[in-house]
Image (cartoon, rainbow, N blue to C red; front, side, top):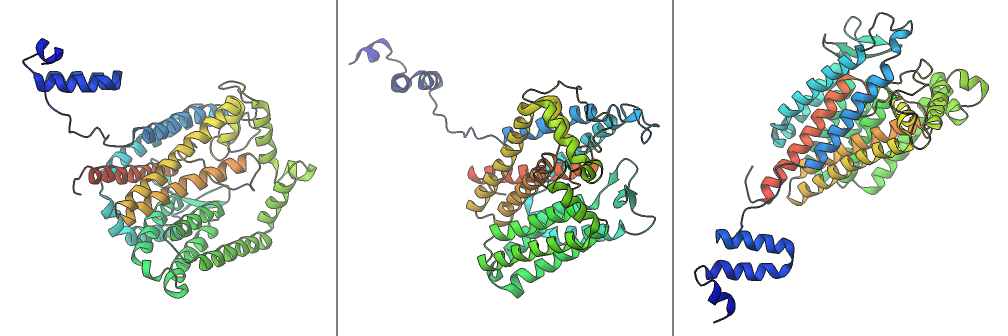
Length: 423
């Protein structure tokens, strides 16, 4: 009989476990000690119910956005355009928008993924009707020459934001149902092309070219991930580039913006079409490594238009510096990365719609963030796109929260299946 058996004769099974586990180091020692005391093997999975790091990344962006919206908008009441507003007006509205978005997001999380699959054509059709309604006089609300909003009292709802979400679930459902026709131009590509062209025509009538670009990227990005024919996809890219070039060439306004983007510091451009870009670049230049400090932006003092919406990244760069910009980029990278991994897991579990929908959310958040940052940094022509989860705007924040909630639901269902459960 060994020494350990002589010293501890009562609970030999528990001591054997303790003795073996303790050889593996401090972690195994703790596990072994717990098993020795209980005498029961651990069999329950420690897998979390949801992706905590993804949730924290989203909440971090929302919190940063809340602070920066307040910082960027606090001086707007000093100007003639917002003379009747208080300095806290945009902060209060943004808090209300975030509260509504989080509440709707929590409700959305309870909706099974299969429901989105079943009703995706209905949601897409309803979104098209709203895009038509916003163009009807007396229904749609115009701001700065664009009719993009439907007033709802608490907030002005932007149908193009709902269309982005509708594009995700509709394209995912379409790709799954038409899987055997994805190598066919007529049965595979053409129906989706017609749907995107219809949406594009309505969005360009507002006009909202930025939203059209995002919707097209979502729809055809999901088709590509779903396995569409490479030659057809290459032709699609060529058609898209030619269409974009034609729209720019035929529109004096867009052509002027493109020329200003290519040389924003030219005297005429700097005072007109390139005005926002030059002041955005000056904001990043003033920020240097660590920024001027929270509230220390000069460009937000009526120099940089739309500082709390489309150009909030420039204010972040000025007040938080290069470090703050890198943190923002990393948070968006993490969300996109996790969305793609959740989608891949769903596909591995033979959940095609869920997998493509998760990757569609990644395309939406990733591309819109990239375009917004690219515009702020002078890498892309100026477009009216907000920074997801950060910029001021009730309907944008709302639909971003719905998309993230659906993504978390997909992840939640993945974890149930990986535990051996049933949906």
